[in-house]
Length: 592
Image (cartoon, rainbow, N blue to C red; front, side, top):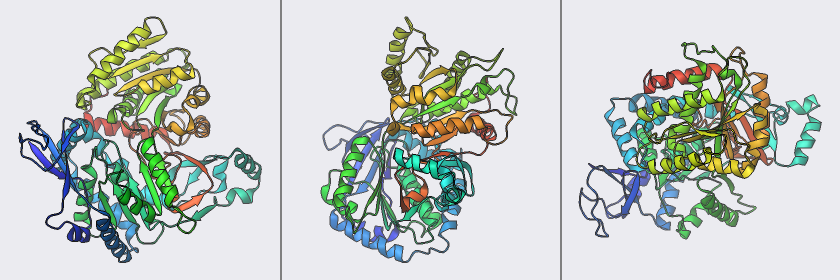
């Protein structure tokens, strides 16, 4: 089967103006998770422009229009007119309502459109349809309403010294100033009640044009950028900004499909949004778009971000400042508290707690095959739970069992097996003369390491970098408080993203003080998102993304980062996530 898809989405008025007969298109062919060659859409088995035949079987062709600078000027003018006519008064209700209808109408095991979409994404990205169905089918974990509430939230100066409540949202937020002098000054002033109650200083800076850059083969990165800008702008009370998203060449399908579906639900909702693909090397187009932007957001490689940042600095002026949010390469981790290893601990459903937590932590490893920044690479497991308690070895074996079950329910997809075999051989050689164990088998399509070595900073960085393609290292610790100083600081603040955890007493309602104290040292080390196990791969845009909150899209503030705890009570959320996963994958998938 050879399917064809659009890798772009234009509002109706832009389509009518630009997609006229004779419009040239660029086409990218995909098979087995890899791009083949560009050209025009071709029937199955037909030769490509270079003379090589398109392989038979499952193949996908994706197209997008070629636009020159004059085309872009016409598109921008249409978006400006659409923005001037947008209805701002009901904007805050329309997007959440449309997203709820989309989830109800589109997803589902027997929905032909959903199944065709999963098949196309599998062909395009190489991720299995089983994994894609789990990750993309749990849209209820992404709350547009929470995002809009977060955009209206204004933390007080209390957040400079401790985790503070977020208005209307579960969880807490804390701000860490970049300047050590600013941190010391804030600590001195926090003794004054009037200062603590005062809102953090934020200078409003509306964005009429938001320019976004998506990348990678995790579906929907462009969609998240568009939703973030749309939802955050709703809290400002004005019309939505013009939103231009440069779609990812490696996965250009999902964003366009979702936006097309949203247009059918609410035809005017996306009149100021445009998504397509253009070349980073097209200097004329890049200069035109960056020069007119008020905010540029890039979720891309460090190299691409450096290039876009250079463009922003070249075009920004005192009269027209351009803010730049770069989201580059980051790594994430998991922490398992000693409470999870206590003998006899069970979930409300009667599953041993260590097994349920291991299943969810394994899911954080398996989703997206560790190709995204949110995938956990190392699990820090706190020992010392008392007589008869489970050990880190027991936990590691439970993770191996869970990954084996997940591999059956949501396999990796195309390729990767050779990478795991090479790593297996490499670490078996290391294990022969050190306190390191390989707890998975040669035929497993994943790798579980239990590493009790005294790791140097360089060795830990090497271990983190090796954890790809469903490779996870279990590192026992005597106390979780040693993790930031002993391990995370060797990675560096600029490369840290999130920590998924199961920590604190299940008998405590709300946030255990031990968890809050750990979150504080994590935030100081540079971790910006703290969520419960099993939710690591589901970005909650209402909370901190690389240190930025939603209101940062439309404001300037002191340099520094926000760290957020993305829950109000960890254990009910952990139990709920476990039930969702059992429902999505089958009740027996992650049970001992």
